[in-house]
Length: 235
Image (tube, rainbow, N blue to C red; front, side):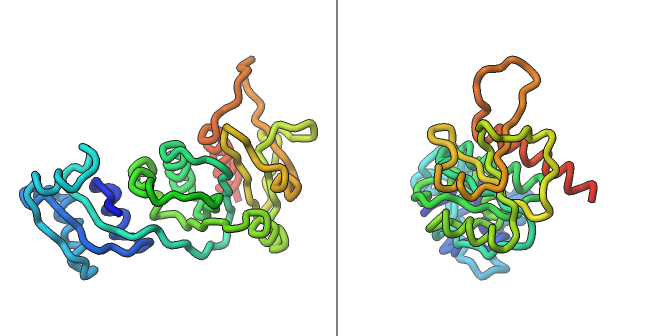
C-alpha cells in the first residue's frame, strides 16, 4: 500500500511497525524535515527514490502528500507493555479512530486493543489523522475479543466499560484501579452485550449541562483518558 505525507512516512520509518519497500521523495524539496527523512531512510537501508514532483503526483491518491510517499506493508501487531489498556469496539471511522489514537499517545497510554475488522484500505488515513501516533502506540488486533479481554481480567486487570446503564457509576467519582482496561464502543452499537458481562464496573460521563445527546466515541475517550492521566500523575 502507499502512504502519503511527511508525518505518515516519518512515523513509519522511525517506528519500525511495518515493512517499508521504498520511499519516493520530491527531489527538489530540501527542507529540514525532508532532509531528516532522507537521512533516516538511508540509515535504515530503505530504497529512496528522488523523483520529479509530477511523477509523485501520478502515484499519489490525494493532493495532501506534500511531495513524499512510501510503499509499505500492513502494520504488525505489537506485544503490550505493562500499563493501562484501551479497547475500542466498533470505532471504524478512520478520522475518529485516528484522533483517538493521537489522544491516547499524547496522554501516555501505550496499549491499544482493536476489534477485528479490515483496516488495510485506511492505513494511510489512520497515520495522517493520528499524526503518526498509529505507529507510535503498541497496537494489537483482538481476533477473539471476549477471550482476549477475559485473559487480561485473569491477569488482574480491572475492566471498565463506558456504558450508561442502571448500575453505572459516575466516571468523575471513580478512582481507577492500578491495572485498568477500558472498553469503549462506537456510536452505532456501543459495547457488545458479551463484553459487558466481563466488566467489573460500568461508568457513565455526567454532564455539566442539560445536553440530551451522547458524546461520540472520541469525545468519551478524551474525557476518560484525561481523568486517567490526572490520577496516574499524582502517584
